[in-house]
Image (cartoon, rainbow, N blue to C red):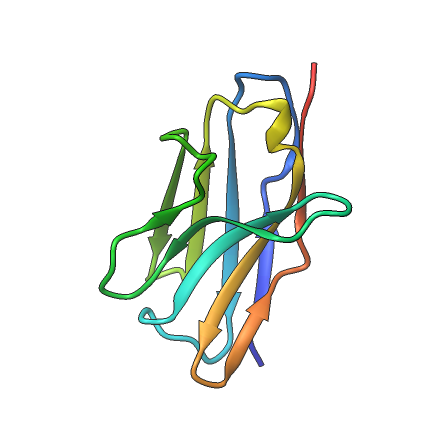
Length: 115
């Protein structure tokens, strides 16, 4: 059974930083694609950043160099370092993992950017 545990969300002022973590457990491989998506009420879930094995990291168009995605394969953990946060970045952020057996989502972590 694959589980994804997200952490690191919270309230931050505009211009601030947060680091999200996603710890994966279960039958997974360092070759599995992983990423972060976000969703606001009434909107579709959108890509924030994703790592595909052997490919360049993909970022959502709104990232504009402010976020960095990284992965610690030894810990099966995915990180999203977010800087220069804006109120528009307020959303629930979800971790995502693709395996040969299926696609998995975390429970989500709330990020609120507000003064």
